[in-house]
Length: 65
Image (cartoon, rainbow, N blue to C red; front, top):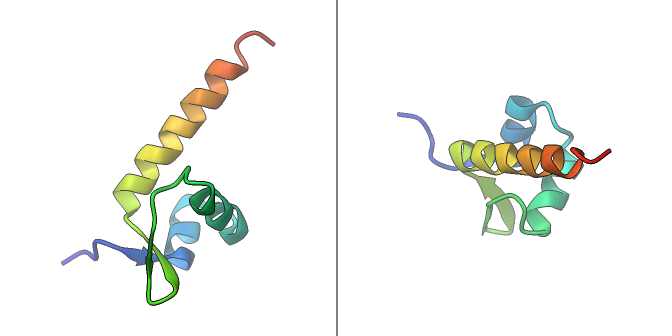
């Protein structure tokens, strides 16, 4: 059975993004995360959806350049 919530390091490995960037995005509310026992935990599917949305927003913002 696949884990529903994973550690920051797992998300970093799966996305190829630096841990610091993922942590910052989570703290800014741009990536969904839970704080459990003082640690951030992520749902990989929800993170992918959020990253896709952020990429689309950035692409739309660059259309006029």
